[in-house]
Length: 166
Image (cartoon, one colour):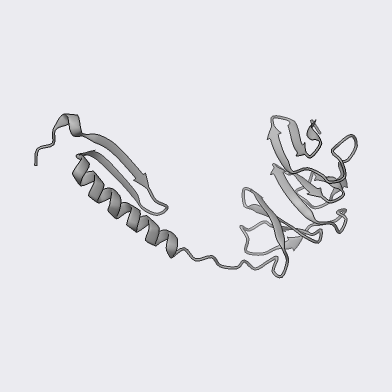
């Protein structure tokens, strides 16, 4: 088969487990392979199976964040859970947190921030203990999002953007 150089295109499609790299395929062949790849991708997505973890079962989990193998889950009801083994086991880590809903969690190294219905709480030790971080910070509703940039932490609120370097 002879391919005309002016009709050659580069094409790349990656799926989760399989990668399909097509180089120098003419348009007719590429369309057939592309359609096959999309059908395969749709079948793979349709057969993906979600499995429950070993915890925090029976709770409304409002936020999940991770840092390496540490996974943190915030719940409606004021409990934060930590898994240090990629979700195989879970431990409540809410020492110092009020029993309020956890709306947003953010993690940066060992620092963890939680936005609750009563403001922002901070942990410097991977959520082992918490302290209020409300000095000059957002209104009682807490933050709607967090962002880390260098040594600064930004909190987006319904009253604007706040920053701390602690």
